Image 1 (spheres, helix red, strand yellow):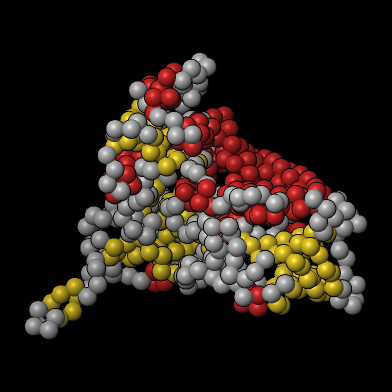
Image 2 (tube, one colour; image 1 turned 90 degrees about the vertical axis):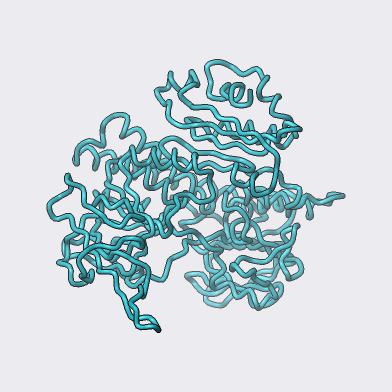
Length: 538
């Protein structure tokens, strides 16, 4: 990738000082779009990006686009049967990684030059930290660069949240999503810590490639924020792909295994039988990560009869101790302890705003209790003329919300009579790219009930949609929540092929306050998945 440009600063031995109209910290979607607009308006802009591998932001480099490239390659491998043997799996995975790297490299280069080639924009590669209310120092490879700016915009995104598990930082084979998407060799076994939507996307993708996937979930309920029927359908789809789940599971320690893999010590609450043996006393290399131990709330557990003979699950006895009256009582909830050995571990326990090292206190920028940059409805921080856009401000973690944040900020800078605010933002859709994509917008039934709304539930099996049958993709369900007396669409949940496209139609109807009858009576082309909205809202 070529990144040479007159406006990419090369720092001399003496530290230079730059005075500019605007400084944007982070090359994400909101920041890069704002930089382009400010430049077109004749403003001088400096963009500081910590890594040359992140020009263009999270989405194109380590987020939505590379992951979707791999997901599409995995789906193709499944359809072609390339996931059926070790040799074909490896070849398919190698080709997928190669294509992913090509796409991200191309997009990164285009994003870089789109800004750096402009006369009004200077791109500096290095970590920035505040030294005062309007001053920042950028640590580049050649030395520090001091920047003074009239207006500063923080667009540093989010970073994976890593739980405090012994060995998690030091054991080879433990990855975040960034590292797992850039492996040269496909893991034959994968354990995923965390069952949120990021973890589930990776579970589905690697299962399609032919990896044996086990997901560890901390609590007992799968996708607790989703409706029970939707969550059950998503789980059934993943299990049909071969993904196994272990609920009420706490990872106590991670260490290298003797076979070169990764060994996890796992405790599962709710199990009461088993031999007492610590994980570190189990022979290294035993315990297959695909052991069938899915009944985490049962009192017993078994290994699959088809598992490898070395598959192993070691459980501890329930410990008791005397109570005040001398009678025995449980000291802790019953739990089983055992080891899992795997080739790779994905830590998918959420993401946290990336504020480390910014020295925000030097500028008077405060954080929320959750560690995000505190902003108001105009995305202004607690310091004058400093804004925060994208994941770093604690809003929904989607690249299109970062773009929306740009609109909020730009409306304050372009002379608008009434700035656009976060409160003006309407319904935010989301999509999770599983083998059958899951998309939703607005309220689900659980939320509508909690809000005390009077509603009716609309349901449609995807098998009833002609286009889904033609595509040989009949799995899933469609569900919508409609206010009873007004016909107002409160929300929709689509577990369906092409749901990531169709959900935007529902969002548009909701944004326009169109009643459900509008989608019921709309004329759609045929055959399409979108025309299923006629029947869903009937």
